[in-house]
Amino acid sequence: MRALLVRLSAIGDVVHTLPVAAALRGRGFEVDWVVEPAARSLVEGNPAVSRAIPAPPARLAGLPRAFGTARALRAPRSDVALDLQGLWKSAAWARASGARRVIGFAGPWRRERLSEVLLGVRVPLSPEPAHVIDKNLALLRALDIDAVGQRAFPLPPAPDEARRVAEQIAAHGWRDFAVLNPGGGWPSKLWPPASFGALAQGLAARGIAPIVAWGPGEKGLADAVVASSRGTAAPCFATSLLEYAELARRARIVVAADTGPLHLACAVGTPVVGVFGPTDPARNGPFSADDLTVRRHPLCAPCHRRHCDTHDGVMAAVPPAEVLAAVDRRLARVAARAVHAAG
Image 1 (cartoon, rainbow, N blue to C red):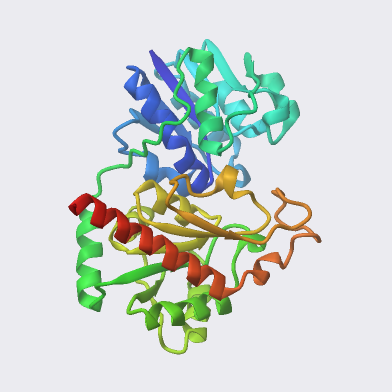
Image 2 (cartoon, rainbow, N blue to C red; image 1 turned 180 degrees about the horizontal axis):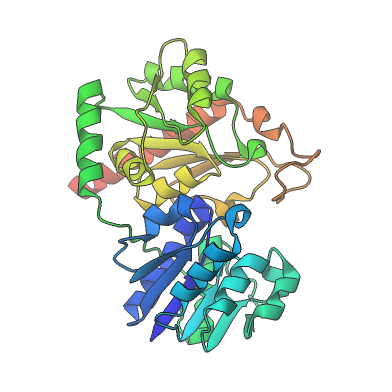
């Protein structure tokens, strides 16, 4: 049996779909995945994925590129296609695959409700799947696979990336360090650079080196954090997604908002503290019972609009002292588990 997953973007959403690929592979499926360029490195070479099929971003999807992707979707043809994104474009790719069964969420659980007309099987969700990972896994019930609750995050092997990150860490002399990630996709979900700078001062006072990670187009944001940290934070070297994952593995803790880097850190098992506002950490946040979130709850929450008069600015209301206290509690849990394991 061959299954096609359609989860095109974004980074965090692709991370949250990895358990679906793992569950299907565990049941003997050959898994193909159509994905846009930004997240392709998480899929290509992944041990749970047979083929990563590149899809052009919607803004660049001219007819020649679209036909090329459509041809790749059909060679070989999938038995089932799963639309895990709930958009017109994701449903269209699933339908274009020619799969005998095209499965997706029913209208009320889709971001673009009317796109369900392109599906063959529309799956309603019962109330119990709270986290988006479990929402994704619940779609597998249409294949008689009950995987809700599973948390497997296969990633491509990355020995070269691991070696480069280890060399960079040694060259900078970072031993006991925290990764702070101020960037992300939605400005309204981001914690201000000055707040990260204040957090960096508190971490440095505890003997933990604050390292500020950044992605494409975010170097200025990282520099603003460093500038507001009074000399306590250092900018990270440039990293690819897989290099960032290796960096996160080696950190004592990662602090970030509801962004792809937070979810990738969770996937590799790093302790995290998430800073949330308009989005719901019960749905999008860390899934380990030991991880923590700090949140200010706007009246519109949960709200997934990139710009909203109600929640714009709410992240600035999260005090650095409260996040630092959450870091202390999270690291105390790490220490307690280490003592328990040693005893």
